[in-house]
Amino acid sequence: MEFSKQAHAVYYARYHLVFCTKYRRKILKQGLGAYMQVLMKATSKKYPELQIHEINTDEDHIHLLITIPPKMSVSTAVNILKSNSAKSMRQRFPFLKEMYHEDDMGVWSIGYFVSTIGINEEMIRQYIEHQGVEDEGQAKLVFK
Image (cartoon, rainbow, N blue to C red; front, side):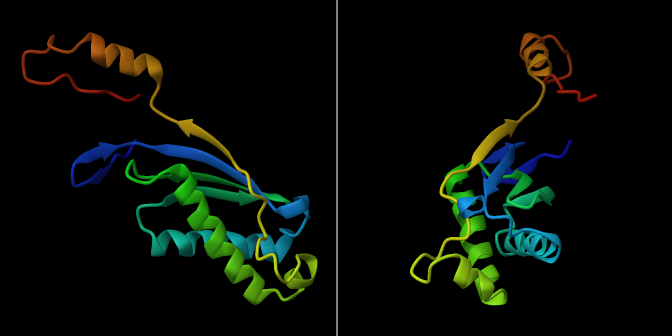
């Protein structure tokens, strides 16, 4: 298990994100789905604190396993991912402009699903329980 660091924080903040195409249109088939994965990885290079660990698409939605730093809200991260990918998709695939109205820039639906993926609760309980027990300084959190 890898921890991330900021100036004043060490964290393990992974999330499962899912967002759908607008109107659940099945546009993420084959090449477009593969291109979407490339776009998401490119976005994480532009925003290095957004670390994408896993990514996959179905025809009308995308799944991400992502680390989001504590200083950034989940909704901000989703907005970054959606807006950057939608703009690039509409430029590269002109047929999307016909599928979605010209005045409506969205390719993604408004909502999203998010679930935290954290450290095992029992491990944390044991860590807290054993504070002050070890003679050589702080108790160490051991991951199996």
